[in-house]
Image (tube, rainbow, N blue to C red; front, side):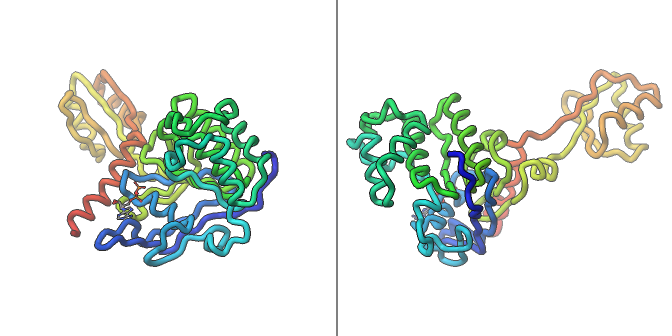
Length: 310
Ligand code: ADP
């Protein structure tokens, strides 16, 4: 896989899917660009799978569109060579061998037998080619699903929770593979409900909660825009310090420790104020919200809004 792919992106516009009263995807617009890994992030039930199924033409949108290179999947000349997907890794015939499973898919898509061996190699399943899929662990299912997605050597790859069930070595492998695929110019859209997984893998983020867009940005900007900086400071003269900070117009809260949780000032500034007043410090630490916390807070806000609005 050394070829550079013709750039083909994904674009959702006003995408909406209702199941009866339930809105699974709600007016969702986003893009996934070629050459980067776009992480599709949201809690379980946020609408990620439904969005991916609409992309693949498996579910019909109630409203809006989701396109690949500007076209609906049904309008693509060679869909298998344009887009590959891993949706439900367990959705395969348990008695078929890995090789036969892929061969059946390859034949349906008009692809050669040779490619089956290549993708099995690529995902590290060459030795398990003649084993029945029913005997596979979830991790092996994931690898087989990724192999199936790669069959047509497509420009766009869609992976729904690809890291589920993989052991740490498998997770590292999948990350490296996604990075290579993106470097070749492919568009990678992969979903996860785990921020910790995204943090190490994605370049860009599309964050959803209750079917709605919560944020769309680079991972870096997402962190910068949403992280609240704070400083923990403690002192044997905490009251003096509190008064000094108040005089300097700096906001803080008292914690149970006891210490002060200062927002809106860098540690250096807090240290200077303390030094100027001759106040000794026991601790001066920058606290940063973890990505997991940011994610939970943002998606929680959407859920809260939803339950209040209902
Ligand atoms: P995610 O992939 O983010 O976990 P899903 O897209 O699977 O979320 O689901 C979004 C919401 O739509 C959930 O509340 C789910 O129960 C609902 N949903 C998904 N598919 C169907 C369906 N076929 N019929 C009814 N409700 C569905």
